[in-house]
Figure 1 (tube, rainbow, N blue to C red):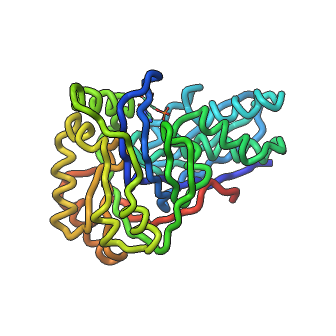
Figure 2 (tube, rainbow, N blue to C red):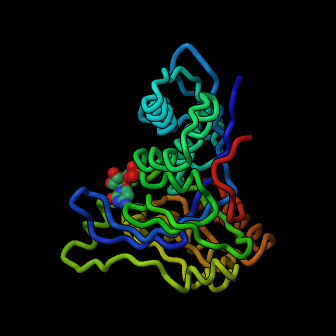
Length: 297
Ligand code: C5P
C-alpha cells in the first residue's frame, strides 16, 4: 500500500525582513502565496527508511537524512512510537534550491503521507507544530492558499485571495543557499536601523480583490538586494521579463528563481517565451495562484 501527496511551491509576494534575532533567525512579515507547481511525495512501507527522487533536477536533491522529507518521517514516527521504515519517493517538479520552498514542500508532503500511511491520528495542530520544527516555510506548504507568516515565518494567519494571478518563474542555473542570502542581508544592512517588519495593507487589499495591477505595485522582497549582490546576473533576468511586458518582477524568496506577474495567461506566455529567448535563465515556468496546500492524491 502506498500513499501519495501533492504539494505546491510558493512565492513570497511580500518578504519584509527584520534584524537578526539572538537565535540567528530574522523576524519576518512574510506573505506566502502558493503557486500551481507541484512535487508529489509517495510513501510505501519498506525494510528501511530510504529516499528516491525523479525529475529533471533530481540529481541536485540530497537523498540522505538532511532531506526534509526524511526528517519529517522521523519526527512523526518518533512522536508516535513508530519505526519509520518507509520508502519516500519524490517526483520533483518544483525548482531545487530556488526560493520556491521545494524542500519544505517535500517535508510537508512526506509528513502528511506518513501520517495517512501510519494512521497516527495526529491533529492538524500537531502536524503544523512538526512542520514548524522542520523549517520556517514548512507550515505554509501544508496549508497552501495564501497566508501571512510572522515570527521566523512559521506563525501563520490565512489571507483571503479574491482572484487568480498569473506568474512566470525563471529558473536560474544553480541554487542559492538561504543562510548565505540572510548573511548577505546582515552584511548589507550592518550599521543601519532595520525597521520592524510589518505586512503591507495595500498588498493584502490587492490579494483580497484579485487586482493584478495593485499586486504588481505592492510586491516587495527585502532579500532581493542580498540575492542580487550574490548573483548580479539576476538583474538581467528581471530586466528581460520586464521588457517583455511583465506587470512586475522580483526575486522569489531567497532566490535565485525570479518571479514575474502577468496580466493574464497570454501575457504570461509572452513573458515566458521572451525569457527563454533572452538566454538569462535555464527554464521559464508558467503557473497560477493561489493553489491548495498539501493534499492526498
Ligand atoms: O527555517 P529554515 O531551516 O528554512 O531556515 C534556513 C536558514 O535561513 C536559517 O538557518 C537561517 O540562516 C535563515 N533564516 C533566517 N530567518 C528566518 C528564516 C530563515 O535567518 N526567518
